[in-house]
Structure formats: C-alpha cells, structure tokens
Amino acid sequence: MSQDTKTGVAVGIRQRFGNLSSAAGALLLVGAFAFPYLPGTGQYEVFLLGQILAFAIAALAYNVLLGYTGLLSFGHAAFFGGSAYAVGLAMQFYGISELLLLIPFGVLVAGTIAVVIGFISVRHTEVYYALLMLALAHLIYVLTVKMYTVTGGTDGVAITTPTIAGINYLTVWGYAGYLMGALYYVILIAFVGTVVLLWTFMHSPFGLTLKTIRDDPERARAIGIPVRRYRWYASIMSGVFTGLGGAMYAFLNGHVTPDTVLHWSRSGELAFMTVLGGTGWFFGPIAGAGAFILIRSQAQQLTEYWHFMMGFVLFLVIVFEPEGISGIGARIRRRIQNWRDGGGER
Image (tube, rainbow, N blue to C red; front, side):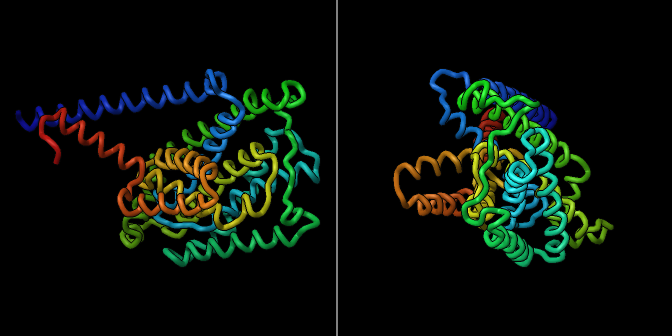
C-alpha cells in the first residue's frame, strides 16, 4: 500500500470516527432531553443527573485554567459558592424570585469575584498561584461564616423555589413536576449553552493562545503575547462559567452552606473531576463529573469511609491512567484505527 493510499485511509477513518462521535453526541443529547420520561426514571435519578450536569458545567470551566492554560487552582469554590450565595441572598433580602434574573445575577457576582481574585493571583504561577487562589477563596469562606446576620453563618441560606417566566411550577405541578419538567431542563439548557460557548472559545484564536501559554510561557512572551493578561482573561472566563454551575447547584439543592459550596474541598472536587475525565480533552471534565458523582453516590451508600474510596480512585487514575477516562477512550480508538489500517498496534 502506497503512502498516499495509507494517508487517505487514515483520513477516511478519522472522518468516520468524527461522524460517529457527532452521532453519539447527538444521541446522548436526545437521551438527556428524554431522560425524565424514560421508563423507570424517578425523582432521584433526575436529581442525580441534574447534579452531574451542574458540576459538569463547573468542571468544564475549571478545565479552561487547568487543561488549556496550565494553571492549577484551589480557589474555584469562591466562584461556585459566590454565585450560589448571591442567588440565595437576592431571594432573601430583595425578594427576587424570577430564575431568569437570578441566574445572570449569580454569574455576575462570580465574574466580579473572578476579576478581583484573578487579577491578584495571575501575578504568580505554579504552586504560588494555586496557594494564593486557595488563600483568597478561604478568606471568602471565613467571612461568610462570620457574617452570621447576613449569610446565616454555618446554617447557610435557604433557596426558595423560583418562578420561571413568572410561573411557579412547584405550585402548578408539585415538586416532581417542578424538578422533572422545569428545573431539570433549565440546568440541561445551561449545560448545552456552556458546552457550545466554551467549545467556540477554546477553538478560537483565544483558545490557541491559551494553549501556547500553557506549553511554553517564555516563547509566548517572546512572540509578543501578554501572558499575564491572557491568564487573567482565562481566570475570569473560568470563574463566570463556574458561577453558572454554582447557581444551578443552588436551585437544585434548595439550600447552601459555607461547607457545601465555599469550602476548599469543593475546589478539590472540581480538580478531581477534571483529572478523572482527562485534562487534555475538551469533553473530559463531563465524563469526570459523571463518574465522580456516580462513584461518590455508590460509595456513600456502601461505607462511611467513602472519602478513602474516592482517594483510592484518584490514586489509581494518576498512577495508571494520567489522561483519565478520555485517554482510555482515545487509546481504544487508536487501536481500532491501527487495526483498520492493517498496521497492527504501534
């Protein structure tokens, strides 16, 4: 077989797998929209998938920094929890109940926090960036706990049922109808919008610039890229979409406390999801969020030492499969391509 023929076959295989991937993505999207109406699906299953989608939004946003910019953050709980608290406090003190107003407000608060924290943190890199993000986020956590009269302290803030386009679906349909017929679809649409927007950004010149900075910051500076500024932009973008995930989580959970949304462990979980799914892949954090929530859910039912089980899973991923779930899928695809090409495994 000539080299041109081999190249043509390889291109054809890549196109075929690309078409299969697109078809699989479309099928999963249709399945997600139909999920509440599938046989055997109840409130728990819809709640669990809604939680996966909310965390997938935040994990995709986290990957903008870790996977595309090369910055490890332990402060994303500030964006996640800042948005969740903004939603709860706006409902409590200002009587805002319209979900279509609360979501932008929560995202705006998260973006504002990201502007400030990001501006301070991007002056440093590597471990110093991670620790500075952690310190600033923990400061917000402590302030939230201490400002009891405003934030409720450790008791947190209740998230009352919002109206959607002026309709209170809890009153009209009951909790099951509200969860499975309204709130779930709001979260799903927010997830789809996040995927489309971040995919567009990460495959634009902006995303390519972030990759250049990740791979070689000094070379990026040498060719005239303002590295610090782009890291700041990436921090803001990541914070905004993490805030969107935090707002979705607040509506789904119905109550937020400092320990559930602002504690440093929440930042660690987002990092866990991203690594588990694969930081080098755009869709990796989605798989990581799904696997993390499902494994944690099962582990909590099996043992009170579920933290140990989650740590053991992370250990196995880092040692044996650093590219995560997406890396496993890519390796399987390469083997199939090699087999189709007749060249055997390389």
